[in-house]
Length: 98
Image (tube, rainbow, N blue to C red; front, side, top):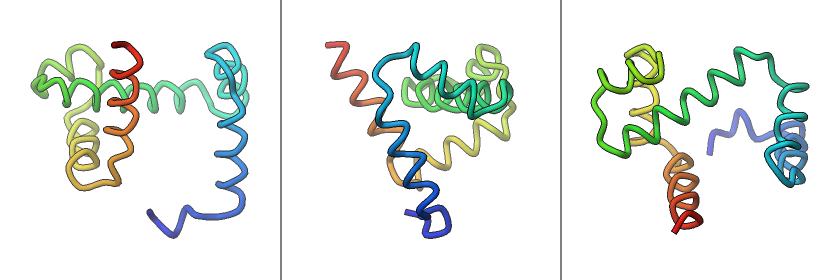
């Protein structure tokens, strides 16, 4: 974990997020907290991660998501060398769908 982001304020934000119960509550909260572009960027990065794990090519991902190759590379680096956060969520969602 990056010690630079481990602060009381970030802890409080995560605690607030963990109280959200459904997608409608998420929309309400995140529309207040984030700009439209920030939220779209977050969702785009998650889609890129999901597609990389599905073995899609950079070209396929760029065409489907509109993400730049730089964004795709950054997400790929996180998947390969990060804290496994993307994989944790992707795997949990797959388990829920089965």
